[in-house]
Image 1 (cartoon, rainbow, N blue to C red):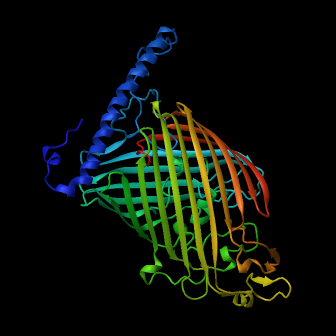
Image 2: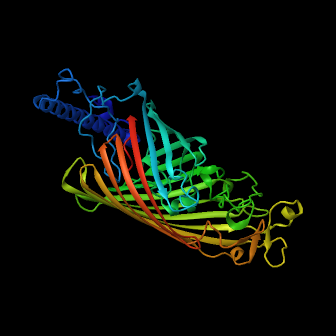
Image 3: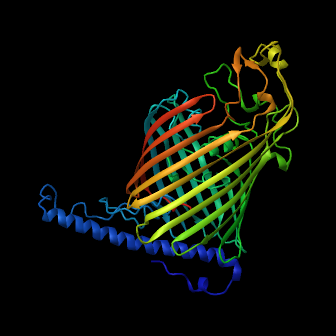
Length: 513
């Protein structure tokens, strides 16, 4: 096990080295815990092999085969689901250095996570309608929610880095490749400061910064997918964080990122387009996205601010509270740059039994509430009509609609409760609610391409109840059975059942608390 150099334990550098020493301490603690875990796994594997041979079941194999050390993960995950440590596994690969390229101060750990779902639903608009999240199950039958390649490591004594490359399939069978994250992060800035730059998730709330395999449920919460977009908030940019000098965890984040593309749907991307089977389909606000002025000033970028604090209520209970805001332009109106403002409050609480083994039993509760103000600019559909394109029209007169400027408000929340009742088994329950105040643009008797138009599908009231049961055979695999009961205004109720299977190969970093 690596020993901290004498100069690192001294006072040289003073506060400038606090963050670096904290990270070094965490690394050494992780190595120590992994070494102990590896020895435990080998002991359990040998005991299992010995019992098998004593029972007469080993005649088909040479003695000792399968008793090697388990395939490792780099770090045992510590997430809200209480992912358990593996009991024993046969591959002869050391978990102390899993799939590592390089060594010492410059290395990369390689990991692969595959998440797949199978199931059915009574809904006809599963992709984008019933399931608005970009990585939700998207059809009856089978869904490749994502196969993610993760590269994480140390660049040098001053920077660490991470990259996540994702492959998935849409409902039509088309392949989709995307760069979820790829960033560089400082290690030795003074005064508790840290800078991250590259492609990354905006520091908004809890779910937004987590990859699908870290979720406690098969799909994304409704309010997150609707108000932040199917792919969440993530784009190229830079982030500054400050770990405040308090006796409890207290951290402030400020990020500035591009405001266009799939990773900024509520901003210059203009929300989502709904009604895939409708002629032409209407974007949010019934306004085409034709007035994006690009980036000419700082307020044309997406800005995210977050403050999070955490403390131990007792030796077994921990609470984390966060406040978030995301601000930027959108391209929904004619002339100018109407703004989008999103505010969020999140809460997380976890209890772990004083007699817990491998993280079980435990109980955790998580909730997020969001509010979005979306400024819609004035828009006249006359030009579309003159060019022979589908247009929004008054149902009575057939004349093109002239929509005035206005601001609409959307809001919602979710709560989820997870109960790890025995090692490897977690029962969950989630409640989702999302709605939007009726805008003036929705009150008119409109038609689009000759079809009647009611309330904006992207802003109607909706709620969902979701129970599930998850089994972790080891920290490298997961099986999850989930039922969704959906109730959508003006659409009706739907029932869905999903079975999710997940595998993990190689290294996977510790999950955020």
